[in-house]
Picture 1 (tube, helix red, strand yellow):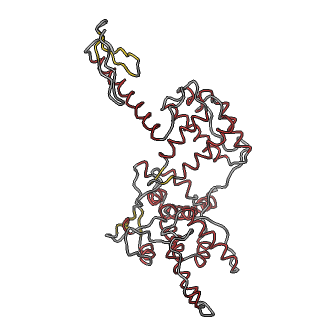
Picture 2 (picture 1 turned 90 degrees about the vertical axis):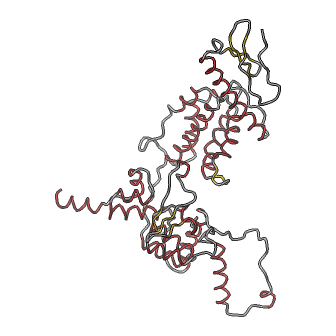
Length: 410
């Protein structure tokens, strides 16, 4: 027998060889001979290409594990849930990123897999089945999480095992059995229910505006005028806005459905354009709404309102070159929400009672308004939904029309 070619250096592709004793083609991979069929036949070459493709995938996985400083993962029979989750977490830290920064989905995944690790960390991953998943779900129920959040976390746990099947870390039956565990349904469980997000009244928004910075006030009004998401309004840059027409078009650099290759086009009418013009930056790539600029304006007006002049020591002070908590050049979703919350509290201290609300309610307000005046299709297009039925989540039904119909015909 002519010995099959053995790769002498790592990464060299195993060769298609002839086993002289039997006349069959063979390829040796990881010390194991794989016979391919009749020598020279299309079938043998197809089998060879398939085996080499699988070999390349395994080589890439080994290379990734080496770069991450990890040893070769245990075999399927010995892999524990804790080890599986560790491998998945390394994958998730690179997958759930946007512009090199981790997304909120990574944090959500962390909360989802935490109870699994605590309850079943030492269990063999192949033994984690429907009863185990139901036990985790019961643990979440006992933690007083709402029904929808529990369903989201169970779905993420299933997603971990779906990934594990794709990596051949657990048998495919593991994921298929977990799919049999359905989500908690409304009215058929003792899980806590949450109230759906409602639109915020325009009067409440108007009462808030005087107690936030001009930047935050403009962002609030832009959201109300366009129905964009909080994550979209915080990244406004002139370089992302097409100002060639009467209606400007803003295309965010990143948005919720970017990973699906969906485009998000936000139309800006005259009122929105007037708001943006107040904050035009020197560099078109700079964020239009800047917390640092808001801080500078606030400090300027504080100095102007001083009742006594600055002392020489105060006048000689200079800002720190590298402060620990320097104001950034842009808001994020959390800082934007906190700024609104602070404005509501400030209104209360000034004797103006403003009920609590959050930025997502502005999107619902806009959806309700458009749907009432122009129909659900217009609302769907304006809010950037791929399907019109998603708009039903955001737009309250126009109950006044139903009441009129009932009064006249019922």
